[in-house]
Amino acid sequence: MSSLKKGLWSTTLSIVGIVLFIVSYSISENPTFLQKVGIGIFFFTGIATMLTSIIFGILGIRSNEKGFLKYVGIIIVFLFVIGVTIVPVLLMAIFGFREA
Image (cartoon, rainbow, N blue to C red; front, side, top):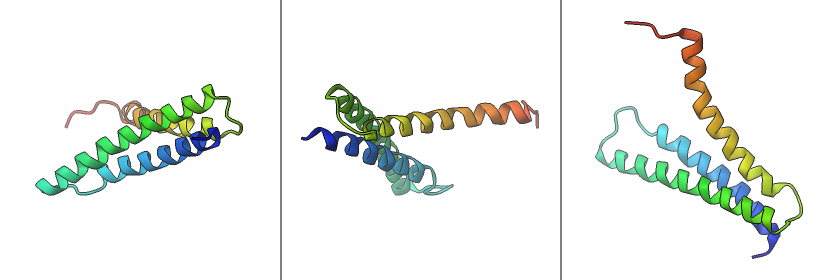
């Protein structure tokens, strides 16, 4: 595999992984059994795809690949994880812990 393709694979897999992760959360509010299976497949495939994207990015960096795509995949996944973890913290900071 040429080194240029590692960065391209990293970026593509990061975008696909994030889309699969988002689709897993947007399938249904009250899922049936088959929808739960689909949610699980999308969720774990999305996580595996994002991890593979990070691996391809690291391989691109280690092989001194030219261009910036080797960093883009890692940065996209990193920003997505930061965003997913920061949103609940910000909501708790804004609205606080209210009792019903």
